[in-house]
Image (cartoon, rainbow, N blue to C red; front, side):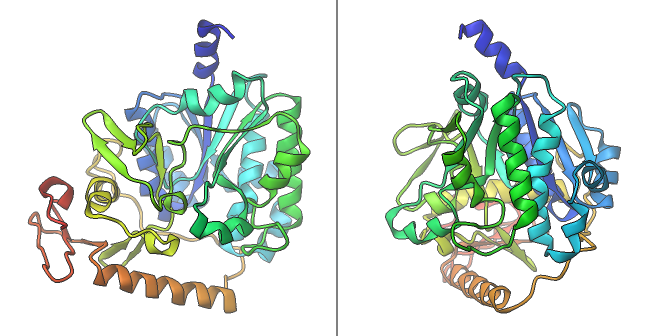
Length: 375
């Protein structure tokens, strides 16, 4: 493929994502980060509740197309039938392949679309690494490996590939692969590992083996996340971020970041990551600052329009049972460790940094990334 043809292919790339009003700030941060690195591709957003859809309609972002949940249900046979049987999370997992297929069938033959989780954030233009590896090689599907370190090999029961970033090309093989993914998830999409299956993610392992034209995206700066961060160092440079081998950080997946009251917890220790102050100050703190500014309507992407505070997906069953209880207890324990070791960030209204020298926790105002306070 010539360079001109290659650039033309990249210019025809698309994205899709899904979030509700509770994840609006993260979704808008992701969209804004893509624009900031120069990627103006069309982004299709599945709005998982009416408040989210109404807010984004009023915001009217350029090159953003909205899809309502009811619209997706109307065009995907069997989707609404499983809604009441699944928890909120399981139903969202079920919707993702349907969103991919729905969008894939709307774009031109040969064009590519990447599904992205809303809690990803871009630091470099991803198109060459995402779409170039698929379209440039004539492949149909691009997957990102979890790249689990040795101490996390037990997590392979959740799948070798991460469903937070998947690329499909609109071709016969790509469409067939997307249809198979939709059908599989309609049949089973539970939020626990079960003989190689796990939500919509475990099916990607089978997809990689059953379909031709599947490539593993090789750029190590793609989908850097807590589960592949152990033993890796991220350096902040004038021009962006890079990994310890010099590879540019293309995007980071802020999986596990949780807010409880006035505190934000990274969740890194769940993946055996002992974060150094640089990781907290230079990567997590600026991202949390961006989320806070979007929530308050102070960011450029939504100036004067604070995000609504709702977060509901009605019509699904409540997530409950022993697994849910154990997950919550473990999460609270890890958050307690983070507080003790100064790896959490407090949200506050003050413009001053308040340092607790025993726990090295900084109040969210003027963040430690600007003062180098977390030591």
